[in-house]
Structure formats: structure tokens, C-alpha cells
Amino acid sequence: MTTAKPLRVGMVGYAFMGAAHSHAWRTAPRFFDLPLQPQLTAVAGRNASGVRAAADKLGWESAETDWRRLIERDDIDLIDICTPGNTHAEIAAAALEAGKHVLCEKPLANSVEEAERMTVTAEAAAKRGVFAMCGFSYRRTPALALAKRMVDEGRLGAIRHVRAQYLQDWLSDENAPMTWRLDRSKSGSGSLGDIGAHSIDAAQWIAGQKITGVSALLETFVPERPLAGDLVGLGGHGDVGQDTPRGAVTVDDAAIFSARFAGGAAAVGAVGVFEATRYALGRKNAMRLELNGTKASLAFDFEDMNALSFYDAAESPDAGFRRIFVTEPEHPYVGNWWPTGHGLGYEHGFTHQVVDLVHALAQGTQPEPSFANALQVQRVLAAVEASAANSSQWQKV
Ligand code: SOE
Image 1 (tube, protein in one colour):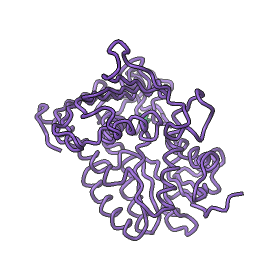
Image 2 (cartoon, protein in one colour):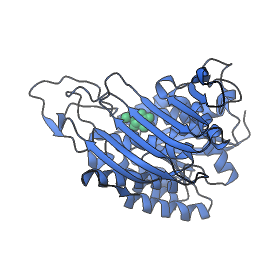
Image 3 (cartoon, rainbow, N blue to C red):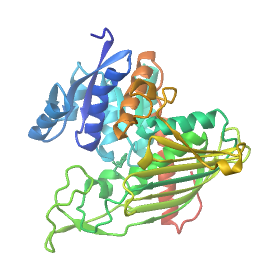
Image 4 (cartoon, rainbow, N blue to C red):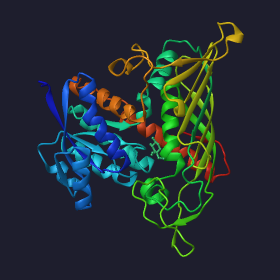
């Protein structure tokens, strides 16, 4: 039995992200020694039977049909926001003002203006010891955390190129149904904010440099989609016929941009290319990142997420890229799991996110990525949209 003080969590939303977060809250204290003991106190969702069933399935002690109840309850210390982007700003502000910590899914908001307000609120709350963090969970994939460590140790030298792709294919079928992810009023943008945001955050974090300007294009390949119930938001194909009514897709299907970076130790910043799409047939969740430095290169593909490819120019040139199997106990997060070679999965990133968040909260320090970090990503998203709307003209961030 742990003697750690409880951290009582209230989660809003219970679909794909809600399930991933629930798993993380349940699992983190079983594999990591945590200074606070997470408790799955309550989950909120609008549909009474749906949220009750989710509470039972995902392990929550109680269910509420209005997120405001979570804020009112004095047995909740942290609000975990797993809902579409259009709801983030209101929920986060209410929680922080009520003295509750916040974990908010990415992208932080649906506009820079909202993200700015959220950041102001979060920075004021932090002065009172109440903290907010944004859920860019890929930072906690061991291979990407190792990449960050290697860049910080100077093993790549100065970073010249950043090559980032996030490729999925679940929209390739033009009869895949409409989902909230394709409705700008709910999601803010399409591939760009949903998956491109992960690439932007990971690239900047690992390279230790910030994007200063972009030239972009966006495309929507399928402008209308069948309105045929999709619960998880990832397309599941229902019964779609010629008569099925169709709804307008109001977001980008694909986003492509080039970027300049600055900051860090390098005199000349890196240049980058980014691509995010849900139409890359055969690529299911290929979140790829390659960095070329003056001394070495690193490459990662989430479809082979336990590995990192490393080329060191100091080794013999014909050694080529070597594969680091990121399953050794000295690799980030890995030592708390299985014996060498057994590998981790998608859900572990969320568990590690909880671990890092809980440690920061116990120490009274700002967890990262902060809302300010996520606001900066939001500014890049906005610059990409502005450039694309203006014939790819260079747009400063
Ligand atoms: C859906 O496109 C999605 O689940 C994103 O919303 C997640 O953030 C990413 O991890 C995988 O793809």
C-alpha cells in the first residue's frame, strides 16, 4: 500500500484519448514510484449511459454528465481534458481558476487567440502553485526522448536539416465517414493541427531550436463525406450508400511546409521540411523525424517505435546507419518496464507523460510542455495557414 498523497483526477471525454489517458493514470503508479498517487476519481461526458459505461470500463470511480461538476467538486485536484479543441479554452480556464491543475490534449486550442488566453491564465495559476501542461505525448516515446538526449549531449553537432513527416491513411477512402476531426469548428484544423502539431513540437524540442518562418500549402482532397456515425473520430466505416447524406469537410487533408529554425548554440539555424497527411496509403501512423547535424544524423519512424537509427560521421563511412534498439534499462523510461529487448507501445507515451507530470506537481515545478510551449506550436500552425492562404508566401512565426 502506498503512503503517497493522492492526486485526484477528473477527466473530461472518454473516447480514444480518454481511453489512452485512463490507461496511463491506472498504470503509471504500478510501474513507477510516484510521489503522488493518482486516483481516477471522476469522468465527465454528456451522454449519461455512455459516460457511465466508460467509467466502468476504464476504471473511474464516478461519472458526471457536465464537466462543470468536476470543477465544482472539492475531491478533484486535476482536470484532464480529452475533448475536441473547441472546448479546451473554457474548461482549462475554469479548472485553473478553481485551483485545479490541468493536463490538456493537443493542439492546445483552435486559435492563437485562445491559446494566448489559456497561457495567461496558466501563468497566473502557476504563481499560485497550480500548473498546466499540454499533452504532446510523443515527447515521452523512449526513442524520441533518447534522440533529444543525444542532441543535447552534442552528438549531432549543429543541426542543419529537420525532416518531419506524419503519415496516416485513414481518410484515403472517400467514403470514410465525417468525424469531428474534419469539422473546423470543433478541431480547428485537419492533418495540420491533429498530427502536424506533434511533428512541430517534437522537432523543435529535439533540435532545441524554434521555427521562425514557413512557406506552406494545404489541400482538401475530399470536400464532402458521408454523415454516418463515427464514435472514435477515426473513420470506422459504417453502412454508406449513394443516398447517405454528406457533410462538408472544412479542414485540410494534407499540410506541407518548409521552415527555418533559429536558437540553440548553432550560429546558423536548421532548415526543415514538414508533411502531414491522412492520405498516405499504407502508412498507418508513420510519425517520422530525421535530423542531420554536422557530426551525425538520427532517424525515427513511429511504425518502428522501439528503434532509433544513428549515423556517426566519425565512424567508418561504410558502417552506415546503425539501429539502436531502444530497450536498454539506461534508455529513457525503459528501465521501469520489461527486460531488454521486449519493447514498448503507443500507450507507454501517455503513461510516461503522467509520470513526468506527477513528479513536477509534487515538486511544485512547471511541467513541460507548458501552455507557453504549446502556444508557440499554435503560432506555427497559424503561420502555416496564413502562408497557405497567401499562395505559400513566406510567413514569419
Ligand atoms: C488521430 O489522427 C491521432 O489519433 C491523433 O489525434 C493523435 O494525436 C496521434 O497520436 C495519432 O493520430
